[in-house]
Image 1 (tube, helix red, strand yellow):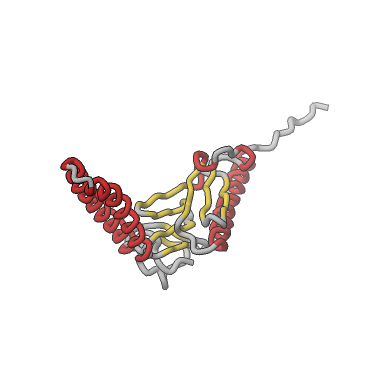
Image 2 (cartoon, helix red, strand yellow):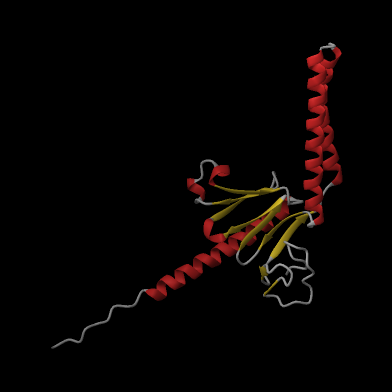
Length: 203
């Protein structure tokens, strides 16, 4: 049961188990579950520091040569870094204000937010491959025996799991949804096949 909406963070406590978010309309049920990782301030600072090192180290070497072209190149690289850092901080801030990174197993599909939102329908996938050591999972479009290049055969869900157990839990929930869809499809197929009608014998 969800305590907050994965999309808009609306408080869902006290609402029916099978319902939709009053704020954004996202549907959920009693089996829905979300995995969240809040914004990590140290990670943003580290990315900015590495970017600053990368765009200033080599221009600094050129600067020491006293070449006018090197000075212009250094100023240009610093300007580009400023734009990059501002964009990175804005994206991180946006993700933080919207509740951090999240993946949720919902009735209509897998909701995934990592800087931008995406909804992966269950009808587009047939299995989920968990990779606990890498802390990510793959929603695969092909059966396991046909997978050659996993990254091109599905959608990778990562950077939202805090442990290997979370990856396994996510894979288990998705597999349950896929199994339920296969059972429903098989039941509807069996209902559509009518038993042969025996003609009365003339004997």
